[in-house]
Image 1: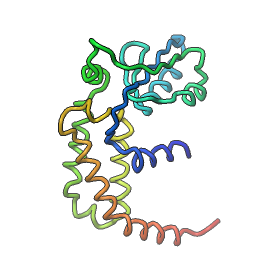
Image 2: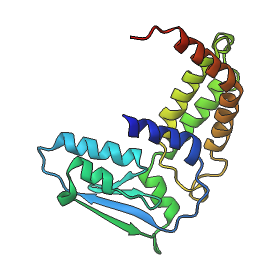
Image 3: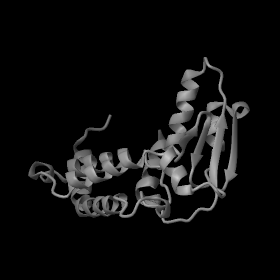
Image 4: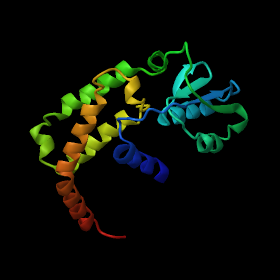
Length: 194
């Protein structure tokens, strides 16, 4: 749980939703698991998605960056069934086409646009409690960015909506932070110990 929370914190505040890198090397992971291992397959796919991978084709997943998958593979006990490679797109492969085929960018863009539409003018009832607003805002933001593979911006459509969404999230969070931290301290001070 601690590692998951730390990863969420890092995604929100350090890496963010907007990737301005021009990573020339990507990561490809291939796997072949016994048919009976449905749960292991599900767990691997979930962890790969969280790590920025998308399904390139059956049994081959791609991340548009260098990703160390050692910990994921070791944790799931799948070293014998997984192969990882650092690769670069080469002609005639069009990187933008590969990204569009691997990731559902339209659905992701719609989620960022909906986030912006819903938070540009929060309801008055939301504004009455800074802690509630901050928790709702952060939860909704994390739900979007945990599914975002962080494709480098130069491979995405123009005016990628994550730019505006991230700016809005950080602005709202920053405006509510002092009041929400005060409310949280007051709540914790009133909870009896033991």
